[in-house]
Length: 488
Image 1: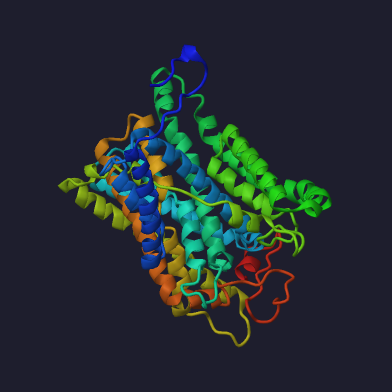
Image 2 (image 1 turned 90 degrees about the vertical axis):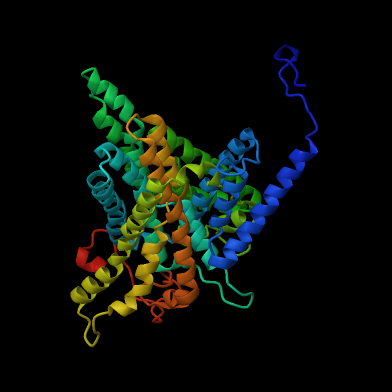
């Protein structure tokens, strides 16, 4: 029996029952087995997490107690932050800056197309209200950063012990994918702030107010832009020199862990209190640390003898996430909701696949503007693999989509249960379809994508491979014209 509060501020210890112990053991065992099976089958371990969450959580078996499920959801969110932090830590900053224009174009397609198609189907076709269509469309315009990083990191593992590992995050198309997914997430979470405050906006309009609408929309946009602009400036001119002067000579696992904890907490707090997304803050924290060495490489270690931040992360930190608990599984199985949800799912898959069209379009414009003597235009057949990878890897909505649509249901009076479940159908199926498509694609043509001279693994600036014909140069200095950018 628990002690009364008057007895003192402590929690009385009680030995857990054998049922609780066995439940926890089987949960972690089944989770590990499901992750392994999903990774072997389709190279998408997240699907195993979803299935186990459905079985052990409220949607199906409800085997775990409710407070345990809340704890695992909280831990899973921390795992999501760590996945995104790792993505920022390992991203090729040189390729990110060189392909910024292309990434922005891809991100705009990935945001605007799902919202437009949601209005076309839900509002014009299924006669849901415009606000409902907007909320569901915003939930489906996001790209799960965690899923994207899991897909790329899982696909980078060699299928056989003697096979060479390929870092797909270091390919040009992988960098465009990650940066476009980041921009999609920023746009989606900026729109979430609007959704989150729709109730207040409605109340203010009813009372004759509404003066805060501009600030509600502008604050997260301004905060995100300022963080994105100031972070590389501070890293290059302030934190980088200080780290190389005082921190790098002391670099080691303990120092790296301390720095990662301090800067990640700082960025999360800044993002939260400034009004930006904490997920975006986690990504910026990783990118900030990766740039401290000043070489733009993925590892910020300053000597071969000293472990870098990536080495430290791989050695000591892991990720846990499970979104299966948050899926209303039983509500999905009604006739009308099923066919509408499946139709909407197919439309939302198409909405993200069209993002891949930027690859052949960029190749076409680049070949037209560059006019290299003796070189013909790049054919569509040569671009289909990286284009399909870019579009398919952005299909998964994952925990981000569920977060947005649940905010729309719980925080506003505008989203009905039927529209919510239709949106959940699309989010869940897209989260499954996306990794499967990417896994199958990389199994078949992954090596061709990695070796592609324009969209595969690119040589780092200043490395020994520069100029050896491994990849076309992609330098795009600040202030160059669009023609120079297209010539990358």
